[in-house]
Length: 163
Image (cartoon, rainbow, N blue to C red; front, side, top):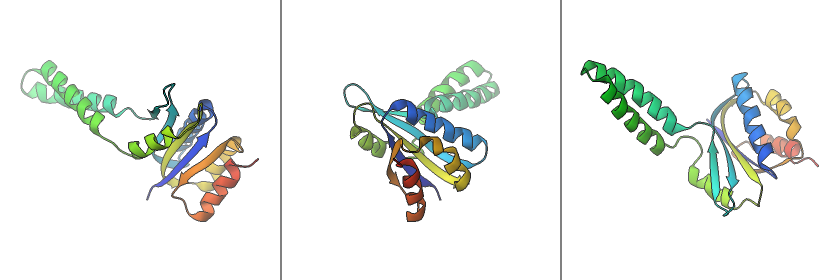
């Protein structure tokens, strides 16, 4: 079962760095990430979601490939690719996996100016190694929300919120 962790930072750079470090740890097989999003506020105060994966582009790519394949069967691969890419892009744009976008927008709307939040949905974790990799963020973040056990949440809070 996946666990949600949301951490707020006082600057955008630190939030993006943490997401990058988490993705790097995933590549090292230290954790499994279902979703990783950085939320910022624009000049008008509206939240902006910076998704790790662009589902529209992925959908267009997959749709284009399948459309070309089906188009070959009907002797019109170019038309098949165009239709497939359009359909794939539309389905990718309408697909929402991971953390609920509305929840992240609500939290993002409450962020102070120049602050940013990192939302991570984690399914597998080698806790001691990941905590070790996140030590450089000690004292830089505030835990907003988690679905971790109380003991694990307290460990995370102690590390990130250390003065």
